[in-house]
Amino acid sequence: MVRIALVPVFGWALMQEGGDDVTWRLVAVVIFGVAAITDRLDGYLARKNDLVTDLGKILDPIADKVLIGTALVLLSVLGELWWWVTIAILVRELGITLMRMVILRYVVMPASRGGKLKTVLQSVAIPILLLPLDHLPAFVGWVGNLAMGAAFVVTIATGVDYALQGWRVVREHRAEQRLSGADGTETVRHGSQQP
Image (cartoon, rainbow, N blue to C red):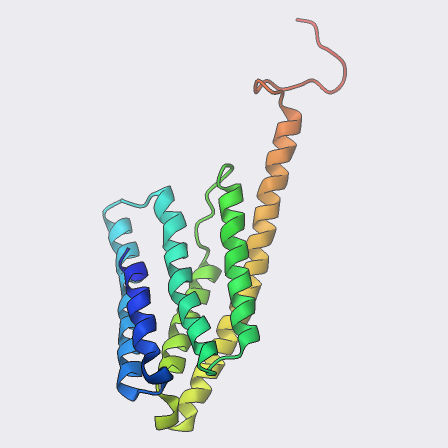
């Protein structure tokens, strides 16, 4: 996965000179952009060549989370993003990833449209915030903050939606287990039936 391989390179570039070097900040933006584009390209090629797999449905969001999570943490370290935003987003991402792994034995939950919108909004907001904003007009920072605000709202909303979907899947599976016996045959609730 190219995205995961680019994460340490991205982090190294961003943190050069304590994050104050304009050139290295721009390099970090380019690396982040390349990593985000490989995500779209991977998905397109997998769908076009009918190579979509359950493993890919799991690994793709994890690769997104590693890239986005690293960017958020480093932006907070640099003072460009409030820590509470970073922590809330990371808790949501970790929680949903763990939930997906738990319910994987019942069903694979692919990314929803809301989840994809969240990723797009984060992928717009983060590069703007990665820019050397001190050297750019103030409105650029405002656009970045507005985009991050929208990304934050969608991130939390989709987290709640995924959690409700996951709870529903687990409840349905448990109900099915109660209705069927250990060997998979259906149990009779109102007395025994004679053949």
